Image (cartoon, rainbow, N blue to C red):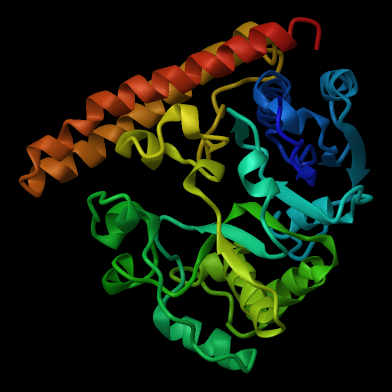
Amino acid sequence: MPGPLPRPFDVVTVPDFTEGDTAVFEARTLVFLASWAECGAAARGFPLHVACIGEPPASIRRLAGRIGASVTVHEPIRLRHDHHVGNKLRGLEVEPRTDRFLLLDVDIAILSGLDRIAAFERCSAACPEDAPNVRLEDWRVIYAGFDLPLPATIPPLAVELDLPRFPRRMMGYEAGDAQLEAMLPYYNGGVVFAPWDCGLRGLWEQSIRRIAGLFPETPGPRKWIHHSDQAALAVSIALLQRDGLAFRRLPDGFNARWQHLYAGSPPPEAISVMHCCWNFLSTIKPGLVDTAGICRALDEFFLVKVDHRFQKLCLGDLLRLRPLRAARLFGGRRRALTVCHRLQDACRRHLADA
């Protein structure tokens, strides 16, 4: 006898078609929708929302219509006149059909069902970032500005996965080296789970505005305060916790990144949400957003760009005199190839007439 169906929640993604890379966002959205249709399992019956910033291409409307996803069109939120920060909050303006939501970036693919978090009790949930981009001295100003105590530190993702920690300048992080071992809570904003009625939408926008107002806008270490929503997400979660809403760390399989493929934890079959992140499908060009073009771009991302990152981690393991750990390079390549082929198969099956 099959078990009971998981309790549904709204799934929302927010592609931006007002910027210059509309072909990239079209390709990412098509991959997301195709992977949802192919791999979503019972979650395919959950409400799925594509909250578009600007008018989407016809291909998005066609495929969304075929798989039962709703498409809405929104203006940019313009928290900053020259940056997209905050636009994803438009996803929290769709009409709810359940009592909870899973807000996803558009550089995401679904590899298996979402049942494991459907049973979560009332809470907010997210995953830690690789490492922080906010300095400790700036966190002190931020938390004081909200009359909140400094929270306890958490391990960055790189520490959890026992990956080499490079000097911050090599990896682009702005925080001090000590925070690469234990950081103040800093969550990846690409996958966020919460109840609709907790007020996260308003808190997150208010926190983005308020944090930006605490610091002059200058080049250098504070660019991540003005050009990112993740410091504001951490503060919003802290405010919700202060008011009694529990926080849970999402399982890694719900925000798996290229580092997880290298580490082999979780394995591809345990990944529900693959967050491809940086440069995903960035090689796609206008006029090439078709099945063949997207499959080529998937090869370029997983077999070239991700592999370049793998080689960097392998070198780091070798420099730390850990040759057995460096051998993760080969398993990582197999896992990346597995994910790439699964997404290509989904695209060939569902994008033929998108």
